[in-house]
Image 1: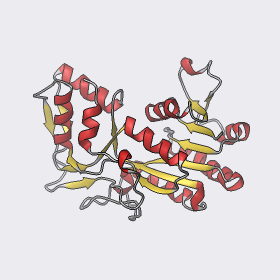
Image 2 (image 1 turned 60 degrees about the vertical axis):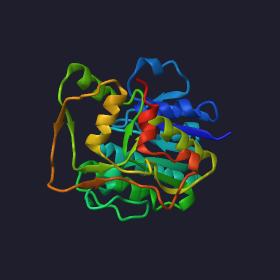
Image 3 (image 1 turned 45 degrees about the horizontal axis):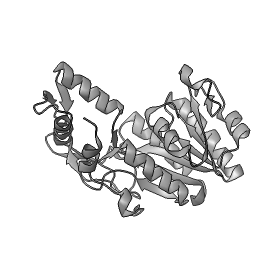
Length: 269
């Protein structure tokens, strides 16, 4: 049985991944805070700023490591440097959850898997640095999964939106932003498939269509029972700009592809 380690399993995405995978694989996860994890033998405390990930890797000897970890940027780089060194020695596979922000300097068109990356944001440049680190490994040793905005039941974005709607506080939307999206339920199924089928390379795990940010938020609000949400329109430019990672080269099966309408439909009211 494959042994999987999820770095950042106490976070939103990492937690859903753990729940999806733990019944199929020998799955472990790391946590930083939270007493609920301290008694779980499959959860290991890890402080990215003070602990050495090599100790956990040597102890567990995972076949696959999923990186969903957040925290100090310098510590993230150090942790992934040690992780790639471990992968070179053991042939362990790394699945790195990256971001659409690796393309945030390109605003005139959506981005595909093998387009050149370029970012103006510190967050995007961090993701690019880690991606480049992984791409020096043999192809069979890594998966780079680039994600757009993540929604879904229990997601931080949905919780925030719902709080604004209930308090009748203006929620910021960006009418000029054209994006694609993903939902947590779809995302974990896609990652599970990639693991099960030993897929490799770069994947864009987002909806196959595009939507303006304000239109998507309005549709989400209606789904949650708020037909006239109070919105604050923020214009960062005079023209439409894209922040979208569309799948093209590494397509998943049809049952794992979806549109932004599917993400809205899955939302519980």
